[in-house]
Length: 80
Image 1 (cartoon, rainbow, N blue to C red):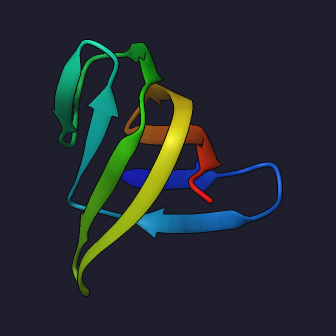
Image 2 (cartoon, rainbow, N blue to C red; image 1 turned 180 degrees about the vertical axis):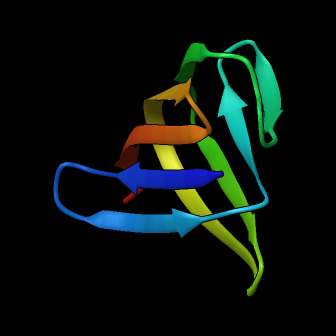
Image 3 (cartoon, rainbow, N blue to C red; image 1 turned 30 degrees about the vertical axis):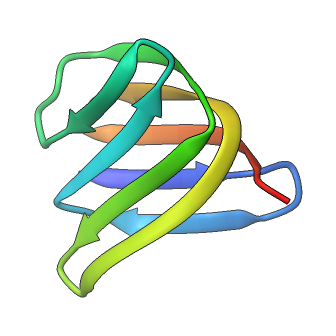
C-alpha cells in the first residue's frame, strides 16, 4: 500500500507502508492493504505510519484522507 501525506508547504511522507492510523472526526481509523474506498475528514491528532523501516508519527491540526486502489492520500494542516 502507498501513502502520500501532504501539506500546502511540503510532502511529509511518500512511500510504501504496511498500515496507517488516522485521527478521523468520527474516531480513529486504521487503514490496511486492500481497504475499501474511503473519503474522510480528519481532526487534530497524530497520523501513525507503520512501514518496513519502522514507525513514524506526524501531528496534524486537521485534514482529509482518501483511500483508493491501495493508495492513501492525506492532505493535512500541520500543527504549529
